[in-house]
Length: 106
Length: 198
Ligand code: HEM
Image (cartoon, rainbow over all chains, first blue to last red; front, side):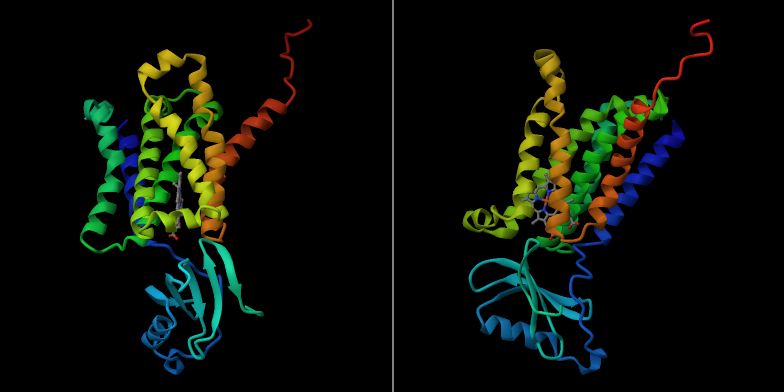
């Protein structure tokens, strides 16, 4: 009984730790071979450019060697989008897993 | 020790712990609203799977003390799964910010599967009490069988919303494995015992 209790407590604790330590990871959807990060443009410039185009940007980070942006399109859809970190070219846009745009070859 | 473990309150405290951590993280700003969907959704799905594992596990292993202990608390696991799903929906609503935005996403496959899963869990949660068991009698089991379509919808929701199957499939694999095991057992012809026909 005691060992069961410890096992259950341990299981729940590790499950909690796991779910806290791995927030909405989205890897492997798009990959950019863009060379070393020193050659990349600043992510803040990408955010500013998107805001100028009418996007709302919630969050931006690096994923799969690309810039991954969470935000809202000018048309109102909440999306997850990938951009090339050197050219800022749009590569992939998806709304809740539904692909709205994918550049050929990506 | 044993009286603590066996008390009803202990189970509820354990089941509420992940929510406390999650809400605390959000409250202090460590977790963004959009990032609350992951832990709440995953905890809900894990509790749902855990509740659904107990029956088949008892079928495969036979009556064990710890399984009987869990079996007596299965209803609590199911209700907690529903609770986390509601929390998941609350943070979804906060993150979306408007009814229009929420309705706008409804036609997307990854989203309506989530809504439908929650809709199926609602009657289960509402009848997860002694009074409903007595009142519904044999129909009660049928209500609880909504867990099967709800689980399938949850799997699809998880798969599609993330457009990656790995985590979703990994979580449901133990359940699928046990079901397969039980099905195979049922299919296997029953060998006559040595005494038969003597
Ligand atoms: C009420 C309808 C529901 C809506 C609108 C909804 C919405 C969402 C959204 C938007 C995500 C994506 C989160 C992200 O990108 O990080 C998500 C993920 C998820 N949801 Fe739901 N959901 C619903 C119901 C459910 C139910 C009933 C369950 C479980 C029983 C569930 C389990 C999950 C899981 C496991 C994930 C993946 C978590 C992750 O790895 O990020 N959802 N949900």
